[in-house]
Image (cartoon, rainbow, N blue to C red; front, side):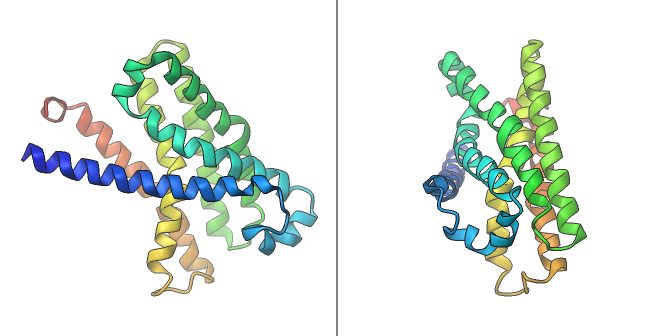
Length: 214
């Protein structure tokens, strides 16, 4: 039973790592700063406002890095073995969100034009992302390592929404019209709320003796 659990854990870890790396590489490809490259071709009207492009680069380029950094920060064995590296990468992750990714995502929310439900979802997601990460930083500064870890898991659940959003779009595009605001609105909400629910369940189970002794 333990062997099967270990194999499943490793397989899930490899799948998550592949998804994160592929999305991160795609995001980092925007370092070419070509205003007509990829997704930006569709946002020329937003770029013309002068607000969208700085927000886009701030969000996407930072997110491309923190997706990978955050994944490794959650590994307890790595953080205990290389504490200085953990602290350094943790600062890169946290301040990358607080100063670049979350504010950039918030500004981008106003240029999505997919209806009020999508707008509300992305605004709330960006706000929670900022707040949860800030609470993780405050917890570690006050020496509350356990609380820091919990907020970091919640923060990364929102970081990982970049992956789950694209997975949902890929899975449901053949069945639903993603151009419809209602359909995309459901996907937008699911992309981060489900992640938070899963993390909360994990944190609750982890705190129980039955789970922690396994």
